[in-house]
Image (cartoon, rainbow, N blue to C red; front, top):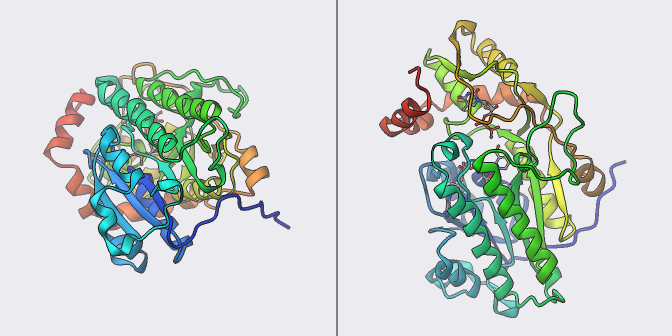
Length: 382
Ligand code: NAD
Ligand code: TYD
């Protein structure tokens, strides 16, 4: 029988969760799941700058659902220190809404943070890394600094059981594995290779430093490659599905033998909820589904599911500094928090291909003139 681990952090009606980047791919799934699972407890404030990758359409169904009454959007930048401080202190105008009436022990209006806002695409970080360091590193520092200040956490960490901060990091902070090397554990050294991965590693270590130095009740998660509905079509799986639907070429980098460890986005979000509620502050948790696949194998599965020719695959120049393999050992999350992935890659890919087939309007609005401009710069063959 599955052991249910102890709940260390519980929600009440008058508590608020700050989700950053909630209009993005993973953030929108996380908000949907949180509002569904928590039923009536806990309000969600989504702080999102709505960059090219933020999309309010991802949350339409949430806004219109029963849970939508507990959901509040603040359009803004995590690097805007006074805006972030106004959310923690409760002085932001959004708190005048009667629907957002909260308990504010210790004078802080935010009870937990799930920090997802980031510049997230490796290829863009290779073209220009400036926004990556600004948002991913400085944005994270501003958030943890505000959290520390408003929860009045001295070295003793007095408010530990009434506050949580979850940093959503990535397996890319560990760097690259050779084909037969053992999978990354939480003890593996951090050796990030791309500008994106380096910015995420800096953020990840900043959060751990705040947990260590100030007793901030923070947790770090490091997840593998996500896929599923609402993922921006610049990313590998949605790019290949949507290009194949349109009979466009699929730009496969190098020999296509690079390996990624894939996880369905809802399994990732289920793990984030477990970490928030049951994880030990100061700890790191890998999140992975043990579904290693080469890029070539994924491309072939997509084409086969769509009934399209293998000839659509076009091998193109490799990504600069391309990591060969990622693979995660998620044993700690499984044994300590009782989490297990529910979706196999085969089932998840099948339903994801179906979703992109049924939601052409969603991705066609994103694959607009600006997108094709980026695409032409990134993929010289077009
Ligand atoms: P995404 O690009 O789809 O979404 C990012 C969101 O952050 C967007 O809504 C964007 O508008 C918002 N944002 C960007 N800069 C901001 C700023 N300065 N202030 C406020 N909001 C800002 O990304 P995603 O794939 O959903 O990834 C979410 C998080 O999960 C990121 O931190 C990413 O590093 C991490 N992660 C992603 C994966 C993956 O496979 N996608 C895997 C592991 C970890
Ligand atoms: P991506 O979705 O960009 O995720 P990450 O680089 O963060 O792992 O890419 C997944 C894999 O697919 C990666 O090995 C790069 C490869 N890839 C291609 O071969 N062609 C492409 O056009 C893209 C976007 C990715």
